[in-house]
Length: 148
Image (cartoon, rainbow, N blue to C red):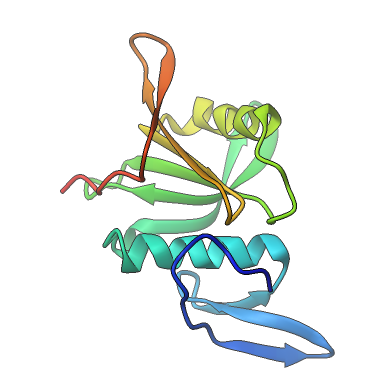
């Protein structure tokens, strides 16, 4: 798998029928190891190991309805009150982070109403804080600490 712009972590990887699977420590099961999944698993480890987010407050592939369509966010982090706090959208390393990616996560936020959005392809990471009153967003240098 590609080297990412994140610390190096160890993972449980297994082969089954000539396909690679990685153990998702949040969902507690093996999932197909795609380039996007590689980015997601590394970024989730970053949140838990470096930013000290409790794994119990992270949901992976959280399904929700947007109008009549079923959508899934790559990951949602909840605050300690159980409210969505941050949405993460992961892309493979060969996917350029552009306006289309931000539009996708912004649509998800129409339903989830989080304070922070994160978009990453494992090489570039963007985090922004949503300012609801001014109806804009502010890019941050780093992912925020979880509000205690």
